[in-house]
Figure 1 (tube, rainbow, N blue to C red):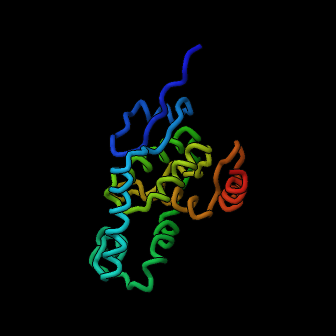
Figure 2 (figure 1 turned 90 degrees about the horizontal axis):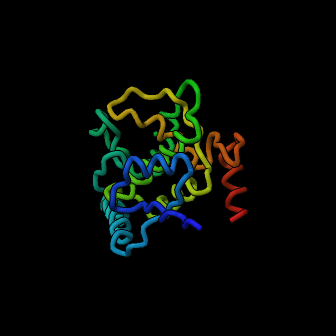
Length: 189
């Protein structure tokens, strides 16, 4: 009897293209790295962001605008609203929606990127993204999006909106509203 291959590990070590494809095609299981040193690095990044906010420091994209607007300060009273404003503004994709395999690849790539520990995110975000990938709760992402420098703001806005319970998702093969699916999913865990 053949044994199951080792799960793909999201952590500080980059994933191969083959690993992303295996995740996208649901041919591999995955897990978050359990190395305490890596987990502490993620926590330190989030603490660094909190520390800068406490001292009213300038943090690109958190207390400033983006791109050419990086010289525009965001008042601390509006910092909490900025992420929602960003994903709402960039939620302007067009065309057909990505196939589930492509949406899984987007989730895997974003999760691995955040696992590098340089984004200042909380570990809970990594857990939530991993859970969505593992449970096959997928954002509906239009194929056509932004033409900005990075080209990923529009697709990633759909990921962020899903994590916040907004827009549509695919779960268990059906198109549903994200908030309803997240509540159902959380109740079944």
